[in-house]
Image 1 (tube, helix red, strand yellow):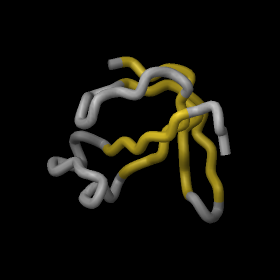
Image 2 (tube, helix red, strand yellow; image 1 turned 60 degrees about the horizontal axis):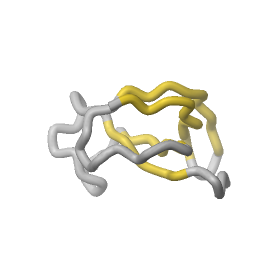
Image 3 (cartoon, one colour; image 1 turned 45 degrees about the vertical axis):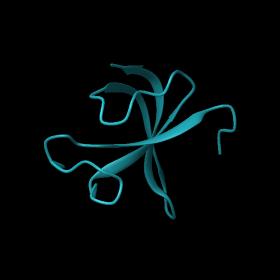
Amino acid sequence: MYPSQHQLTVADKVGCSLCTAKNALNSITIWYQGKIPAVLETVQISGQVSHDKKLGYSINASTVKV
């Protein structure tokens, strides 16, 4: 989709006390060109939300702050 960008998945920390990929029901895919945050690191993401009928929602992030 965006070959020059990285893809990561994030979950709501409040809604996901066991935040792992298999447990995160309320997660969203993030497309971002910058440095990828560490696993389980809390981040603030800014960007544009987009929707695909097959893939669901994603965010094209302009910033990811640790």
